[in-house]
Length: 225
Image 1: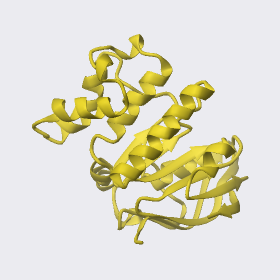
Image 2: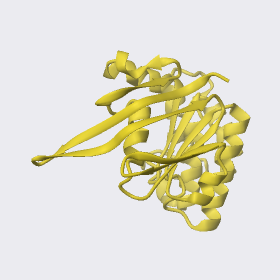
Image 3: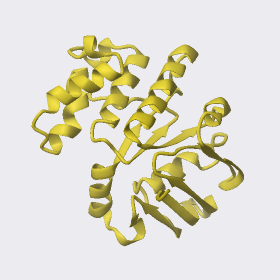
């Protein structure tokens, strides 16, 4: 299988006052097309920083990242943004829905930005997949946390991404709702062949993925799978 994400000898340091804070140190791993992958670790271990670097939201100090066949080092900010728009989906812990748009409108924003002609029809199909077609006209404030995350999932998969980055996708949800979101993530991952990279502190969730790494103090402590 070809690699959708390849990380080699990645390090990242931030300046904090008079001191350097080494957040990631010599991290290497890869993710195959269609594979589910978890980045696990306690708070402060560098998980979210690593996700941001892999998605091209930040730049590395040392090492290289290949995302969808492109070396991120060779791309400027506009180039990285174009690559994300074409290939990458995101799901966040706090949903990040636009409050003035309905559920359907939130889902179809990425489609409309890409000039898709039947965006509304595709948006309704996606909402139906996550069980929320009957809530299409509701605003985020009228939806529960679980419903908002299901809308966010539908939006993330709207452009049929090659890879989806999910940052603590069940962190703000109760156990039952979180389990349903996990099921949907894996269902859509299999159905669309989208590689899935999940940042989580939840070891049970990590065990459900094809492969995982455990970070501690910015270093890979363990690789499973």
